[in-house]
Length: 249
Image (cartoon, rainbow, N blue to C red; front, side, top):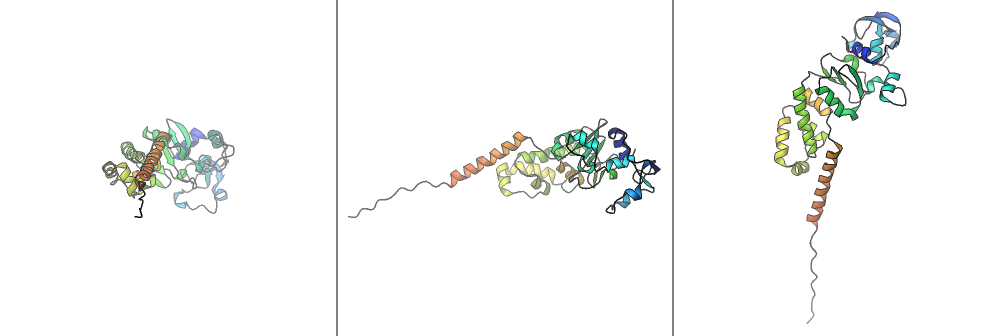
């Protein structure tokens, strides 16, 4: 089943955008919706993804909705919402629309066998209609599902975050020497050594998108740096020199 039809059946409550019949240029199937030529914007440039046809179906239109009352209700926002703004997951037959603030939930659903995973970094582009069934998607990146590999990479990356390294350092491999010294060079070398062969792969980038640690762990890191700063001040503090009194004889 085309992903647009899959999510429409679960989430759209049968919403009708149009009644013109024909073959959908997104799904390639016969259905009803709006005339494609009248609907498509001049800025649309993903022509290679289209199939022969004359309409955009109601199923596809749901994933292009720029003023969705269904999304507004689901996200409990005070105004109509854009479908493209959110990451979309189907897990145990239920639809979830999520943001980067929901990374723990996203990770847990993926490693527990989510049926459909379509994540977005910026929420600026329509990407859902490009989804490939059976693949994990992050914007234009498609990944063959590998739950053990994802868990391994994610665990190592989050462990490095707990040692005080930034997400940018972990993703690029460009670490600050001061942080390496604070974490301990042997500990850092062991963790980074396991990542090196994966950096630059699609699975590495996918895992790197959903890094997170708890608030208590963040506070621990802040305290660790505060203690280091305090210790540095103490070592820099020079002892007071005793005044020497010169006697004129």
